[in-house]
Amino acid sequence: MTKLKIFSLCLLLCSTMINAKEHTIKLLTSGSNGTMMVFEPMLLQIAVGDTVNFVPSDPSHNAVSFSAPSDKSNFKTPYGKATKVTFNEEGVVLAKCLPHFVMGMIGVIQIGENVDKTKALDDWNAIRSNVVMNKEAVDKALAKIK
Ligand SMILES: [Cu+2]
Image 1 (cartoon, helix red, strand yellow):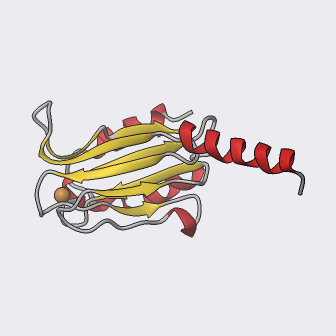
Image 2 (image 1 turned 30 degrees about the horizontal axis):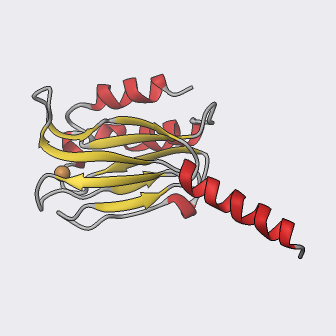
């Protein structure tokens, strides 16, 4: 490899690292609009390669994916501990807080633009009846994805 090629490669790698953004999703017992048990924001649009920091308000919350473009994007964060997850696949990831899933504690992450949300909709509709509260909010969030 020539020095120029090595230099170009370094530049490319560095620019990728600089461009990748970090976002925060708060896992809250009490949301800012008064809703209980929420991911905030509930719908987050990020770029491929971006990182999301899941920050629980207390030890009762975590984040576990239940729909992802492939297994590569599945994740599970520990209870009560802020945890960063990097998403390297285009598509839609749905995450829930394990103990508060029934209460609609769900987050929607769109990775990339003009994504295919078919799988996310199928996975959501398959378990939608198990959720008692706030399910309309999940419907709305999924409807916003283009
Ligand atoms: Cu929770």
